[in-house]
Length: 411
Image (cartoon, rainbow, N blue to C red):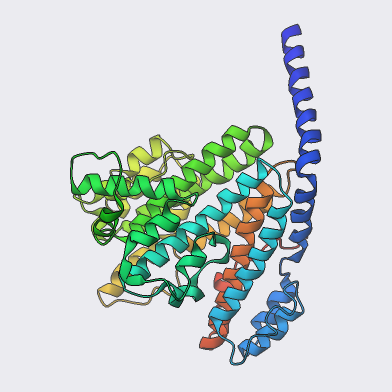
């Protein structure tokens, strides 16, 4: 009993130390992010956006929100892509402001958040190089959060796209934080091509390997490596951060498994010869890992998916909700009805994630709020883009079907 009391006193002492040390090093940054929480669009903002008849009306509606006059210098006619890009630029500016105030280990934590977008940018530029497009032509599609040193060279007008991957690989695939993920991917891809394992990949080999690879699978593989690395870093931090981020990243890993599994249904990735490619995309942690993922590795149709998810009530419920979507999708390819009235797994995961990220703000003294804030802002931008698309198409009655409200007032 005495030992238990001593252990409890030690735990209480460590908890008190965590609180005081956290506030000394990271209290200001956390306060800034919690202050930025008040800038999310409220139901009244969404109502104004939903009643807009044109994108110019949306510009006016956004000016009355926390977004302010961020579109005032954009010429008419306004494009949906312009609204989306300016929203991301505003998020990137706020992100960089917060990051500029950080000290370690929070600075590295925020680097990890940006790495996900770096992967998106790198894959997009590789796609452009494969299609002989100059990277500067892809400037509009670059995610501002994933910009890094070296991209200035790649995005310059003098960059020679005919040089293939040599310069791309040398400039930023080696010198950026995602370089190790990419190198590991290239080694694995090279091994598949040639069973002889190599110590590394020569620059001259990169072009030959990448032209044979499916870029979507490459992106999923890189993001899996990033997610596992991020989780390992967060667990190493310990304390409340390890607890809160551990939960969010485990859920994200599970959702990734569900996304890969369901989107592979009715494609060649569900055939016996390709199952190994699909299974390689499953993260090696999460609530489904290892028992759930072991069962999901064997599935090839919706019946086997349902059987594998049977012990996981929440995920089984998600699958049952989207089953109609995938069945309708199959019937469309066979000349059936539209899938418009059903929701995909992505739509449901977005809604689940919003609730999870909101809950991260309920605890204090942890880094999870920084990750949750970025993810919630990304969902808000998806909401704005969806509304803009519906306004353009004249189908505003569908707006409420897909937008996911954030921090709804509690009655």
